[in-house]
Image (cartoon, rainbow, N blue to C red; front, side, top):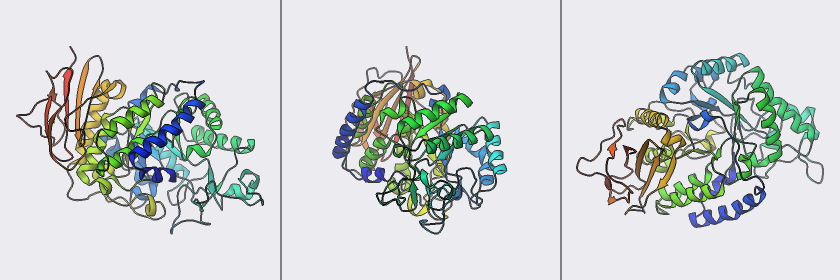
Length: 463
């Protein structure tokens, strides 16, 4: 959902940064009395999340087809499966021929097109046997117009001055808004999440359009869920709201970074705006705050369509080498270009698993994920941004801890670039071996020569 993100994506970066400054100031003021972030499970920052749209993940479009591919996802390096809503989809006022999965008809049921509750249990059990976790997408702010709640509890809904039920946003015509001023709504939603946690063993939730629901509800929900599973995780579908990570959520969405990246990849802003965006978020949030790092999801046109195949790869390398929790989406590892967002949210548009003309993306991503997991510098180390002589095209930074230091150079333009990077110490860097990655023989750090959308990762042991 999160329609506001699409508007923000098209702001000039200067306007975007200004918007963030205004809103982060307000958020910082609201959060000034609690300048900390919640302590999330240690395994979360080491994890890779994979978002699945069950309808479009396969031709059958069901849960069993996901279970059948778990070994592939495990081999890629996936730790957490994020399942977009698995509940029945509303028919009344639906968009498209099938309707949005975010227009939920029954929070306690499985979409019959996806299978049965037993199929869902089988998927979760199979994931757990592979040491993978499963989180459900929860749409807490609204339901479909033909929801079972509409009939049973019309008092649960937002209403206008005339007493008519309304959507949470006028543009969201396919859903009706829930009223969290009613304590019974809060109790119902928490009990519902407890049901999936206790009866099915899900490991957490991703909460759609989080800001449409009061923060104190999420704080109460998380506290109650932790009593059942102390390791439960909750992801916020929101950005630029530090208060959400104080008690309620373990990780949020780094929408500011995505918006900035879009501008850079479109050559509307220089590459060093990535650094500015990162630094702004770092100043805005308490130390230890976790952000979901992504280039592709169900709300965006596919990255390979926005950036081209090599550009999409370069962008995802950035997300895999920065701090935070990296995300993959529905066939991204093969360079799938099938539509996402509208119209794919409302139609059957399955992933094409064997596209041609691609580099060996799955092998490259597998190696990068392995590199990230095997080195604490990436998931628990510092990010040190470096100045280079091509700031319009190249981002350069170090990831390091007490033992290792990694130099990351990424050309976010289609132009070949030569230059140098300012390194505190340049000696000792060796190329990191990544599938199909060739390094120049006669150019060593601090100098670089990078083709369009090229990227290099170097390593040295700390003295």
